[in-house]
Image (cartoon, rainbow, N blue to C red; front, side, top):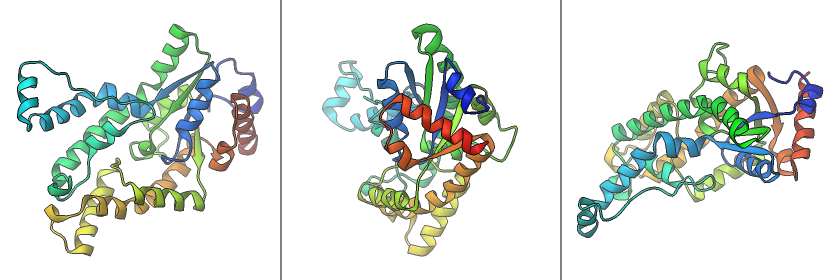
Length: 287
């Protein structure tokens, strides 16, 4: 790790961290808190994915839908309108909407093959965005003068790395530039995430092997044909399994590549100084 102990962390003139863990446990909230303190640069991996690496896919999907409407088709064909996503750090809906859900097209579902193609696009985009972390850390300091840097990673980071491989190229690059910190949720947090997802299921990225197995199991369990699957029902069914699949991967990332803090402790933070103290405590505990 780039900070060997709490003393080195506290003394560092430029602190660089990467936050990881399940979506909804406070990564973006904490990154915003640090940014609002004035001397932290906030790099959002999901925002980078949705703008730099998948922005064209997202915009083209909007255009395909617009071309189905005669008025919009005419305007597009004459370059009279401009269509783009308005993705922000706090609103990643254009990215998740593009990823989509497999199932009945009448309910907004995608053919499973197309769904998997979009998943692969996201995998490549996420790896590229993660590998951009060091560049943005140096850019933030060299151009804008930010001494401190926080990378707000996506919940699916554990799906695109192998935390057990000491030569994993993505984790090796990240470890050279940041202290990786897992925001660990409790059983109560997990239950709340499941309830929240059940109210508003959203597309997510998963490993191909996990998705193929989940899709086959769901079809066998429900007896549904591929084109008749309720997309929301499938992603709800998959979500709890995804949490169980990701938890040990996050834990291995923290054990082999970084450290962990508790989500309830993160929720109590009120300043960058509080965060510095929390990380120092975690470094002491690890030592």
